[in-house]
Length: 271
Picture: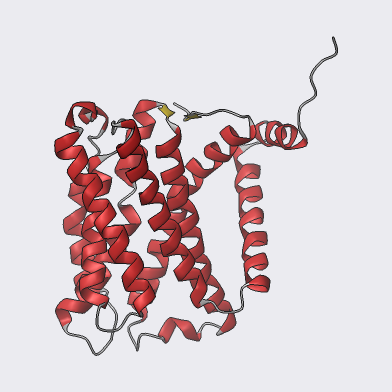
């Protein structure tokens, strides 16, 4: 019998794997730029990027709800990430309820309820399947740092000081909330499908949010930096938090797509 031919996607992936890390980073940046251009040309209203980001995030959490309901196990999930997610969603709802549009509030409220349910299931109903030894990332040490940053850099809006700091803190918290989950998966080495779908959804969500900021900067020739008033430092902090979160998730998204192309049900993470 003849040798089974690989698909073009598999051959391309194998070629990329053989390249140097510098070239891989350049190829990833080029791919991200092409995606940004495609979004710029196809999406008429930039506001849809945030709606899409929050919708994908909500869909990812619904995937976890489905997993816990049908599989009766929380293996592979980081409790710390879910608790941090619930915290930043609560703070974002609390701080933006007076000025955000209804669609954003509804999506955040759905995500908060679903995340709170996931936290409850991990802590109480499915506690015996929770692998605590894999969920020991020192993320809590970052909380005072992020809170201090929120006091120093927050939007210059008419809302009260507490609301502005809460909104900034929620944004900074969102940027690092996925770190315990990634730390967990690095320890586990193998990630089961539902958890992988959830983390990939987070990656897509953050890319859409980051695309919004980049396209807004491009279309306003930099004037978007001053949209929130004269607090230039706030915009830079918020923008960098989006970039950091997108970059953090990019590595996992690569291995997720690689596993899908190779037809693997489990995502394998490197040592």
